[in-house]
Length: 264
Image 1 (cartoon, rainbow, N blue to C red):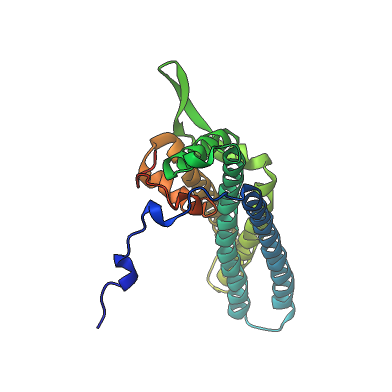
Image 2: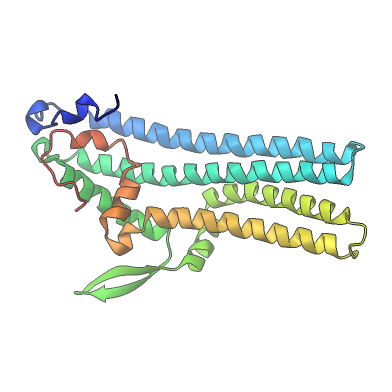
């Protein structure tokens, strides 16, 4: 008979934890930066993997004596694989950003008094570092409030322009362009297989698909980065918890602290 697990009835209270036990922040920091490097390494491996797949399948599809529909389907498959891998690369980019903020947070907590390490304090330091990182990633409008210049609204198109010179973005665009080229070839080939189609249709069809794929990929990338820093603008629990949930190196510091559930 199913029901609530027994462990859910157990209360986690501060007295169960040794709050005087020293936290090894140096090891925690090293683990965080190692994970940051690992995310970048995985991203590079994915891009290299896709370049190898596309570099093999696209020429092979042209060399094989197969029908236009089969060749077009092969190109579409390469584009589909690229679209899936683009999503993975975006995910790694988001975690890289969170780990970067997390590492700065841990560096700040190294100087904190052990007795003051509670959930609200850890979250506040994380939020401060999130705001410090935001201007280098997100373009936004500012306003003066009580003599302080604060961000008020994300400028999405300006953020795209701002990210153009980023090495992270350039690497992402490598896989995006290859995916879009594969999609172009799929559209061009499949439209070219229609006997009654005008001569210009395959090129137009392929170009439209190419631009659409690039647009969706850039939009997905920008929105993912915007979501990381949404809290800097709306200051809501939902926005903060969405990004803080990924900073799992900090979650163990919450044990033993009688702190509120909501973000500060």
